[in-house]
Image (tube, rainbow, N blue to C red; front, top):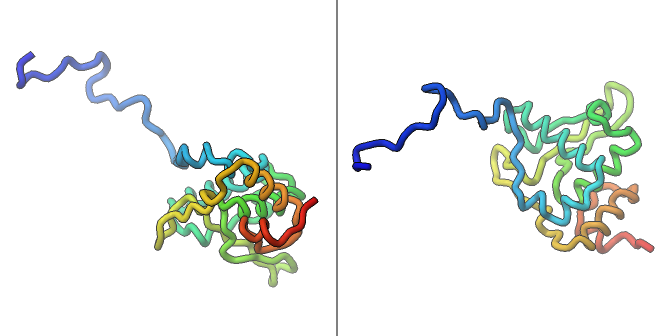
Length: 169
């Protein structure tokens, strides 16, 4: 084959697009996340919490990470039992995948407000992803942190706080 000749084309329709293109929105996740002890120790409800927040990020075209609003009703519509939402949120936050940037509160219509979320493995409009989940390096640590977070009624607790401040039998 000479230098000016192109290799033979694959059979198919001229000008056709590749068949392995993604037709709609997608949510990229690093293989490093999927292999991490923190990810593998998440409960099904916590996985769904993360997925539902990620869907909300995609609905905002990848913007407003840190100001994403997902209500308890939206989590419920996504398939999370109402009694599992709060433990799943604590777990996802303790393992470093989600940050609650503004804590909401229940109550009467005029006084209630929803949580606002940030996915730590996605960039915000002003900063790169922080990947807090990388701090957890062993399955034993991840399982212990997840269990303590699920069973703890305490608020505002991250992985390092759960390690030190909560006595566990």
